[in-house]
Amino acid sequence: MPKNIKGTCALTLEECDLKESHIYPKFIFDYLLQKGGKRFRCLGNPTKVLQDGVKRHLLGGNAEQEFSKREKWFAEKLFIPFCNGQMNNSKLIYHDELYYFCVSLLWRVLYWVKDSIRGERLISKCNQAFEEWRIFLNGGNLPPNFNRIYLMPITPLLFDSMPQKTFTKQQWNEIKWYIHRDIDSALFDLIPYNSAFFCKIPFFFFWAEIERTETNLNYGLRILPNGGNIDFKHYHIGRGPILSYILIRIIMESGKIDDVSKMLSEEQHRKIIQHTLQNIHFPNSELEEFVRKKFFT
Image: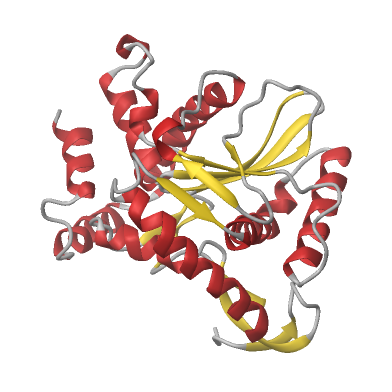
């Protein structure tokens, strides 16, 4: 498949050469490779091997450049330091680049999954959000109706207040795997007339309110369009419907992974093991630790 094709940029709507754009930014997969990964697979098509995540012919060169500037800021200023445990007791002062990055990520992921959303009301609202975000990302005004964006940094330590007997040892391992390594997205709509679209990368959830009537839903830190600060020392998720939903989601996703694993042939399993062991980053890595806990404890 050619890397560039002629088409309409989903962001600017201009006719141009479309790049093979990452739905989730490449720096995420670079990080996972450094932590012992080798290749990636999508739950929707588990037999297809991905080198660095899902790509689509989505954006032209100008849009790619705008997105890349904010990706670089997020990766260097927040993602890598937080994942490496360097921000637990610190504050981050941010400007408009964080809000832009969050919206750009949610917009790209919604583009990828919006055909799976069900229900006329929610489809309509998600389409409206998608278009408002597109206009904003293309240099337009702040989204008038779908501008409440949240960032939820998340580590296993944030679950420590919960009684250990709540989960089995295997479930705790699955929770940590999900937090450290999984990439996920869905529309939360379990409470009538309260919905939010989220995407999740290692250690972070990004949430966008689609509709809200309840006031006690905690999506994490609200990101302000013009900047603000994050105090990681005093940040916590707290209990409530969103935390419960995340925990249920983790168990569900773990089951899906097990089901997908059964779809792979013995030869595919052998190749996965071979490629993993050949990765120079695997020995003594985070991934090796997870593998040992899953199969040898």
